[in-house]
Length: 249
Ligand code: PGA
Image (cartoon, rainbow, N blue to C red; front, side, top):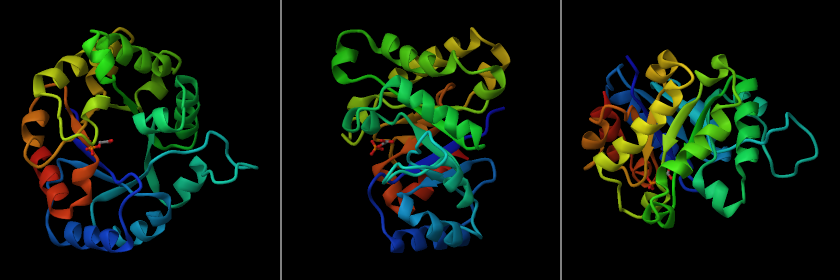
């Protein structure tokens, strides 16, 4: 049995008051223990979140990390630093990092390894562009991104990775993939993983991301290969995010 996971990716949004609001909401209202929830705010809010989330079931995550442990990398943050702030998850390969900051599959892989080496759970993000989908290349693109990383990990490392399928055309556009479209790709990712090991494939946590909201979450989460969500815009509204978490529990 896979435990559902809902991850709120705040991107470069949020504020100290939103952190406090989340702390209040998630300590006052009871959330099913059958769902894991992680909030992924910008770096400067991690320490405040660590304190505000103390009496809540919320875990903490970061949006990226540098592959190095320390050194002359102005502006960067290492995995070790994130663990010192009690972060337990980190996004790697988000399409915005790939597109806006030119992260290649190889750089994504380096970050994945760095996360694993300090005990952070990497959420590896993959997904096709609209052009790639229209050209019928969705599965090729997604499995290339998954394969580039997963094929080089040993089984013990592989079982620690969470994969988020986020069609680029659905991110921040309000245009969600249909449950069937998402399920098809995600079943393909699980089948790919089963080529290595069927038990690991069964245990793999797969998230859907791309305009998931309070209205469409339940239907997406009901799909057999969708174990949770990576939620952007809707994770900035405390009540909406809480409701999405409830629909996963
Ligand atoms: P969105 O973002 O929910 O705003 O589409 C999802 C993501 O980029 O992780």
